[in-house]
Length: 76
Image 1 (tube, rainbow, N blue to C red):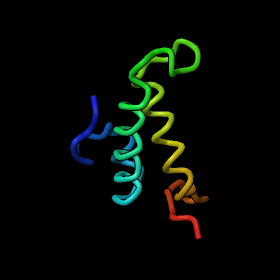
Image 2: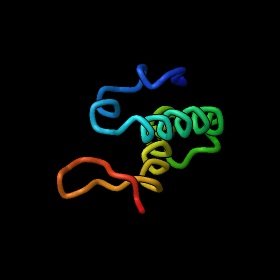
Image 3: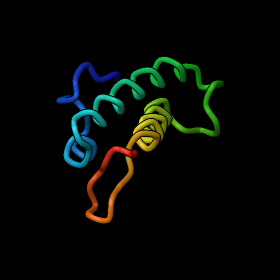
């Protein structure tokens, strides 16, 4: 279930990430959704959706960090 816009992202993503981080999440999720469609390409018994969400969060964490204020900020 790829996302066609940031508005379609889960609330747990939309309500915590800034707009640019949401775009990173969306693009990474969609890419992972395509890349891991074959269960043999995934580790363990995780679903395609679980893997795509993990990849998306990892991509966000490459560019953003959660601050002491519990908000996500770009890494500098």
